[in-house]
Amino acid sequence: MAPDLPILPDPHDPRLTRTVSGTDHMGAAVQIAVVEERPLTIYLNAQEIVTAMTIGDHPDYLAIGFLRNQGMLHADDKVTAIDFDEELETIVVRTARQTSYEEKVKKKTRTSGCAVGTVFGDMMEGLEGLTLPQTELRTSWLYALAKQINTTPSLYLSAGAIHGTVLCQGDQPLVYFEDVGRHNAVDKIAGWMFLNGISPTDKLLYTTGRLTSEMVIKTANMGIPILASRSGFTGWGVEIARAVGLTLIGRLRGQRFVCLSGEDRLIRDADPSSVPDDSKSSRRKGADND
Image (cartoon, rainbow, N blue to C red; front, side):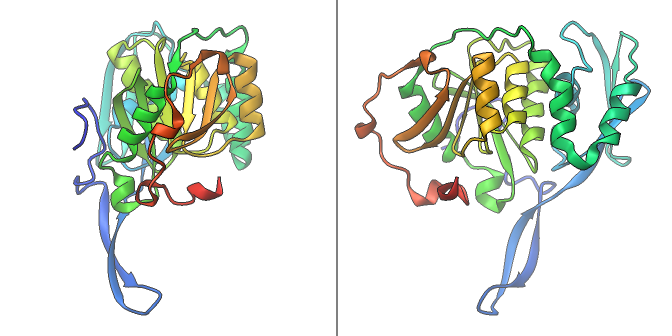
C-alpha cells in the first residue's frame, strides 16, 4: 500500500509516460511504457534563465526550486506570481524584488559544455561558513525509509529511466518527486519546501542517484543535514560532505549501508541481522554495480 503523503509519484498519469512498440531479443513484438521528456523554459521576472528537460509534472516546484538552489531566489523573497503556460512550455516566477542575473546566465551559457564545473563553481560560494544542524539519525529510521520508499508505486517501477528524491523526517517520508534528472527531482523538493515554509533542520534527503558533488552541494545549500542513497559515492562528493559536516550514507540496501561522512549523527539502534536483505525485485537497475 502506498503511504499517505501529500505528493507521490503517479505512474497512472497519462501525461508522464507513453506506450511504445518494439521487439525483444527473440524478435517477439513487445509494448513497453517509456517516460515522457519535454522542455520547460524558466523565467525569473523578465529574464530567461534556463531550459530544463523534465517529465512535466509540478512545474511550479521545479522552477522555484531551481532558482532557489542557484541562489537567484532568496530565502526572504516574496513570490508574487507563478505563471505556467503549458502550450508554450514556459513558466515565469515573479517576485517583489527586482532581479538581474545577466552575468550568472552568461557564465552558465559559456561553460555549458562542462556543466558540472558551471554549477559547481557558482554553488560552492554558498557553502562558505555553512553550519548544518546536529540532527540525530537512527539506523532504524534508515531501514524503515528504504523499505517504504523502494516499495512505493512509482514511475521507475512502471517505466524505469527516471530518478526519485524523497524528503523525510524521522522514519516518515514527507514528499516524493521523480524526474528524468536527479537534480530536477531535488529542485522540486526545494520548491515545495520554499512555497510551504518547511524547515530543513530535522530532515533527511533520500535520492536514488549517485552521491555526487552536485547532490551534496544542493542538499547542504538547502540546509538539510543528511543525504542518503541506494547508489554509490564520488570522491568529490565525499570531500565536500566532510568539509560542511553533512552526513552522507550510500549503498543503502537491505541491512547494509556505508557512511562516509557525519557518522557522529548516527544512533545505531537497530540490529542489522534483524533486517531482511534486499530482494532483487526492489533493486534499481545497475545498483549492484555502484
